[in-house]
Amino acid sequence: MTRTLQTTSVGSFPKPPHLIRARARFRRNEITAEELRQAERQATLDVIRLQEELGIDILVHGEMERGDMVAYFAENWNGFALSLPVRSYGNRYYHKPVVEGPISFKGAPGLTVPAWQTAQALTNKPLKGMLTGPYTICDWSFNDYYPDRRSLVLELAHMVHEEAMALAQSGATHIQIDEPAISTRPRELDLAIEAMAIVTRDLPAHTISHICYGDFETIYPALLDLPVDQLDLEATNGHFHLLDVLASTPWPSHKELALGVVDVHSHRMESVDEVKAGILRALEIIPPQLLFIDPDCGLKTRTWDEAVGKLRVMTQAVQAVRDETGLD
Image (tube, rainbow, N blue to C red; front, side):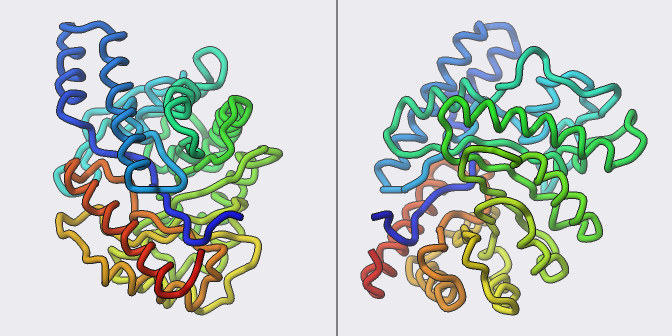
């Protein structure tokens, strides 16, 4: 029997110092591509071992091969160029992609498969395949080729669908399609839903979509129409106001919720008691068999020690709730 309140993580982990050094050396042509891959594999092993040590139920590989969640795909697909650095938030910058021609694969789909296979071979626990959704790739890129946003989003949706199918055919049973941009443009929610229907069509895997830091009051409950098995939403950064929004409509029995219970954009370490309180509030409106627990977002903005600390607090709080409520 599958236990309730399963734990997971959203996707990215901080790059360890040895990998940061390896990437810098690779850019200076001081090491080979294979030596860089070896550093990425060691970092991935560290991520897997940490999650197993903490008792996390559904694992991620940490995305050690990726710099940015959108630029990673743009760098490896035809039709994209990269702009000069653009500020994303705080003092963090990324090379915003520019769509300058028809988009297509460089070879066969399956860009994300090798990293997933490497990581899944390191653990017996389920490991999510990680993709960025078509709406977010469009929204976080400059479009200098397609006639409008809808044309680009739907073209991207077909490509992301092929990537998802490649992951599923390789054995991935859980596939996450990140769509953080959905919550920032409420008027285009219908387009995002249409695109996700293309991505998940006939996909033989449990599907998840992570969405964060936006106008949930405007897009809920229409967000429930997003065709995935699980919505993964942040709550801690907004002081769990999300739960008040969700309480406005009965939660559907066919949809899971992964709830973010630690803030990945704060150095502050939450206490077990405050995380436990957030989970107990969520259980007032979400049936325990539908509730999963994870951080608000990817952990790559934290130090390694902060990431470990936040995940440890999260798992301890989940166990405390299980003990207090009698949940398995």
